[in-house]
Length: 559
Image (tube, rainbow, N blue to C red; front, side):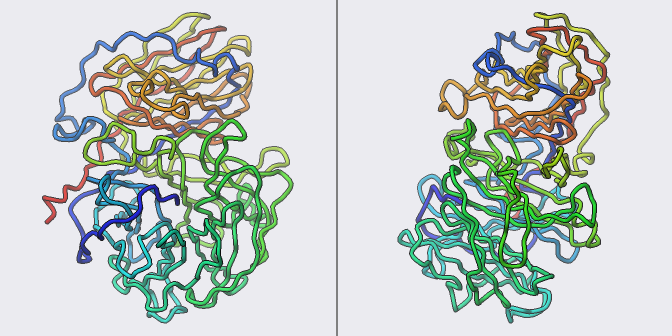
């Protein structure tokens, strides 16, 4: 976690209690592709041609698919945001007593005051959320504000706070020194107290030393902490969450300052005899033509040391806005089921422009959708595949079937206009002769648009937002076209796209690649346009599905 804010009075502690309804709900973007790629000429700027303004009027605000009239223009319909103020890094959720507990970094004093706290939301389905207020305040124990960490349920009372206590290990910084502290909750994660022995892990003289990810290693019989230490991930072990011993480190090159690590086992293609370990971290991909994002390695873990295989690092998402990602499993499942699928969520933003989005009542963007991830194989390489979490289905309305069509090179056609603020568009499209390109322009009421496309020649899925409403005011990192390699199958690709008021998320190639991008336009009528800039394309199967708005809790109404 990079704290771009840094020191202000603490927000008042709230009593542990449940609030009314939701900070916002999580939605899911799915993009399944069987496909091929994007040429350099397209990535250089041809992905966005002139677009006419949409002409169809929006549905009445009373529709369950339209946001309430009192919401600000750019508040997402189905993505998690705070009601007010600043948000950034998500924290790994856990399940306790029938409820998912989720925290994210939150600054009630933004932009005039600095420092983050842990804000708390709960859910029973990972889609609809209840606002629980601040769980760990900033600036309360003399060690600074509260950064990223991990909350775990200490079922066996290893830490001495009682069986079932929730223990949070977090980074705190004061006077530029980062340390790891322990906070304990005996009310199920609604409020925490600082451990009198903090810090439990003092800084050894390292500038970047943060974001502890903690889990119980059943095979080794101890707790494990993965810690971001500039260009490496350090590993520490503990019998009790209070006393930590250095075990080893994993050193990287060319990825900048690492943040927000994660380490977990997964079975390749669900095979219980082929279990690998995945080491994940926030990283800087500029040297590879990318931006900041979430990278990972596949390898082996022996209880103290991670050893990567020879395939190098890979990217969990190829968009510009999938950062500080966390993953978690469902402890209600069997041990085998937990190895086959995990959830993931990330901060949908980028530090290159983190505080420049046109939002008035809150800042910091939003969370991504909740995803399911699995470890599959691509030839001899084990890699993570992403797909929408099943909870998306609870927000879907009646899908509209789009008739098959053939689009000659250089031509365009309008698709049905979305009748909702958030929607899901799925496309099965092919190139008539195996070459060419298809683009979907996501048009806003102001004539600005973002483009989702696929280049069959180079086998790349891509997203461009250099023609949206705010692109001219944003830095180059925002305007750059982002792409992901996705192999086609028989010259066809399936795209599954989830669009919200301020974002586009795409999963491609049976979850082979995803691209997550924040993008902004004027509120009002929407339109979709299909474009075949070169080569004939054929749309054989497509649906447009509205997504119901997820309510947001109003603090004033909850008091």
